[in-house]
Amino acid sequence: MFAKPSKLRLLGLLVPAAIAVAVAGTLADPAPHAPSIAEPVADEAPATAERGVEKAASTAVQTTPATFFRAATFNVLGADHTAKGGNRKGWESGVVRMERVVSLLGSQDLDVVGFQEFQPPQAQRFAELMGASWQTYPGLDTSTGAPSVNSIGWRTDTWQLLEARTLPIPYFDGAPSRMPAVLLQNLDTGRRAWFFNTHNPADTRGNAQQWRNAGFAMEVALANELRTNYPDAPFISFGDKNERDEYYCAVAPGANLWSASGGYVEGTTCSPPGGGAIDWIMGTKDVFFNGYTRVWNDYVSKTSDHPLYTTNVVVPASAPVTAEHVVVVAVPGLTSTVVRGLGSKAAELDRMVTNGASTMNARTVKENTGPDANLVSVITGRRVFPKAGGHGVGSSGRKASTVHAAAGQYVSSIFDLAHNNSLRTSFVASRPDAQLVRRSWNKKSGGKDPYGVDNGTAKFDKATVLRDDSKSVAWWKSKVARRPFDLSVIELSGALKEGQRGGYTGEAYQRSVKKISQKVAAIRRGIAAQPEMKGTTLLVVVGTSGAQKAKGSSTSWAESYRVPMWVTGPGVPPGDDLYGLNPSLSSPSKSQPNYSGIQPIRTGDVANLVTRVLRLPPVPGSTMGGDQRFQIFDPASLP
Image 1 (cartoon, rainbow, N blue to C red):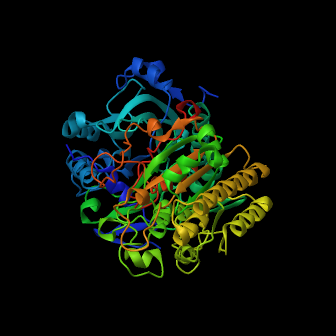
Image 2 (tube, rainbow, N blue to C red):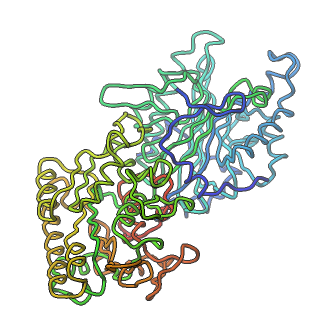
Image 3 (tube, rainbow, N blue to C red):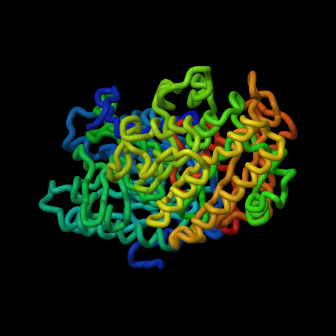
């Protein structure tokens, strides 16, 4: 019935501005299986799922890219409240109001919704209006017993049902009311996810705190059970919990959840989100929320006595469970021609070919083959020109004070995602112009932290620019020996400096490339000497520019835009070709393709490879690898 929301549009909404509240139609800044816990509907032969599909899907290997969707929770005000004798006099009937609910689903581009007080007349009208475009559970299905007044609904062009069950949550006077849980699979990506929906009792018939508490405990138990039995499937909970802070601090620590509306748990400290809502959207920590919105205006207020709460949801792509750290070595001035010619004489780079996946035919960004533009693309996943969503560095002859100034807006980076999620980060370079990176994500210029604990605006735990590559590697090794970094970016500029001095083909340049190889070996030994990083670190080495002409532009010169890339670490198949692992990308022979059509592997693909390995969502605003499909792993290594 409604146009399916674009994944790219959802990706564009992933900005580090946190919670918005819609008031009167406007947006503003806001301040092992236990049958006794939940009874699978499969035992009750549901009419809403094909049993053969359930069995096949439950054993499917999950090798999924990032998954984007829109979710909501909505208490739609039960039809009995506005029927004759109800307590909402003057309201239109539940059947009429359901037409407004359907309209809101479309205007808000929603893909999955938890409905409370979704009574049979409303469920019937919903089915009539939506036809086959939406499915609900239990909806009108009575195989679970009495008709349910709480359902989960989803778009059938986005999700398919794999499994369904209900949980007997205590309601008024402790009487059990069956609340639904469904395992859905995203049709675009294959990602599975559990969704749960509850309505816990209010105090309108006497103090119901003990029944709410019991329901919250059952929710925690269900979440933990499902995470044990379905480790690849995140858990998302909707509901009118009729509780504010107490609900959050009951379920967030117990099931390791966080809320779309904010808040955090750290140690014994539980800090609920502000706002005081009793309607909640919660998820496990492999689910990332943004754009949380309270929709409350004249239209909604004639539909229900509750606001509609919506959020964007991102589930990152799968990564090997043993991969926990990433080290990116950016090497400007590194030509594929010389690297290929040196072969085993560049021993460590040759070793990476044998032990990992690589290519000699990656590409810089199209607009600029220089080191600044491509270093920033590695960090942000963006192309160059700001009008096309680029980072702006290298788009003109002027040097900007920060990347944000070059772009005309805040530009998020891999450092934002990692630091905002309490991961340790470092950056070190040996090229003065790389100070641009430090200036762009320091305490003064970095963005706000929208996730959990506020880790501050400075996105580096440690960062410096030193005189040469030896000092840079020594600095990094000394820091990591004391305490590991989750994310490190190290720029080695020796090859660029020698190429600028004497050209990119002679013996002196070849010696500089051999030295780069030796520095990469030193970094590998530093990783191996760190107990927490040994065996758990992805090492990426990428040329962030090839040869650079002394005069004029190098953008159309193959020696400048053709660069090498190597990846080693947990889950990376040895001796493999990066294009062979990525059939959706195409090795472009000698050309430099535009951004339309089938793409080559580019420097900017590194950014969302990093976020994937660290189990983070794609970099907000990234224009390369935004669905985290860049594949470097043996599928057998993935969850």
